[in-house]
Image (cartoon, rainbow, N blue to C red):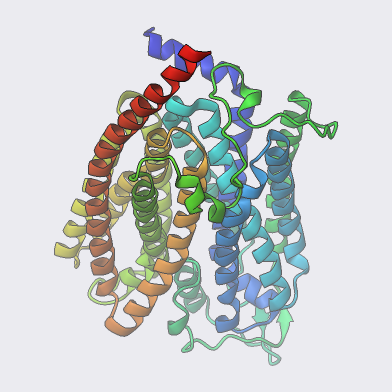
Length: 496
């Protein structure tokens, strides 16, 4: 066993309970992010709302996920506040799952999903930050594993829901008639991409008044029970860290982790939300390239997470439109194939991130994304090629966010703000790019979906090349600043 292997194993054993807890928290995140698409038509029946009304529930979840990411930094000052935030957020997700069957009005459901979205945003920031603080220069491997558990949760959630989904209309008209299951299957898959295809649903008449016959409540209660061990695991970690007695002198996040971690930086500048991280006062004394690293890293994850959201949201619509005209069931498999390949990719990159540096993995991933999307443009009429490219795209794009997070934090010396800024940017990209691409598809046709994603990928790769150049300059500036500080400190030490 090499010294690197020994160090990684030693670190993992030392932080075993913390690491497993944060991984389970991200499983809870994945469980919550994927259930809405398959169950949306049954929830429409439950709330007896129109398709146009129910699709705003997606926006509520995504918008408040962004809000949660923005404010999560307020809870990261101490280990106690971080773990309390994770405990309450994972518990809220279970409570939301249990409460959804009682939401018989669209406004009540939107509020519940907004609450769940806020909890998800806080989880996203805090869990990433905790692992970065624990492992620092060795965090890339564990971040890949962390994001693997999102994909795992996103795969489990639809599997739990599927047996309880209505095969026919879940609202029977007053005359006992119902909509055809063929149209409902098509609509379910169209809406599975987070509800962005709201312009194409007006042609389907679905009853809003009548007898509700959905059994989807059982799926939500099962998911609530599946998620309950997660807040219990966080509570056990708090007990292990002796934080259950609410001490006023709770240890800071980095001070608790022992000699392997660096001392925590001064929080006098308000090391809290994403807004305080972007405060110009925090950049004083830092190399001038620090701001550009923040900006470029954020822009790259904004684009790549936006591409993931757009692809998951629009691939079904693209597949059933001309020239492919794919069958409904085959097209419905594309979204599952995409998420499965993302999960498999993150599992593979756990090993690759141990063997190769983050810049190498990012280069391979971003080049792979561009090549796959260009091939999709050229072979746009091939159904078989669409399935193959969906698999490869998921494998390539799966590791971009965790690798970029590890690379940026390493460049900025693990001060924590990079995690907050990147998570917030990724959430914003996933929400805003879907809205932008959705409007383009509505006006220009389904082929513009591939073209928009390809252009975004090329922009992302160009920004990454610029980031590598800025990273090179940043290293030189950091060395120069360190030398200047040593020169200033030397006379003081001689006088003392």
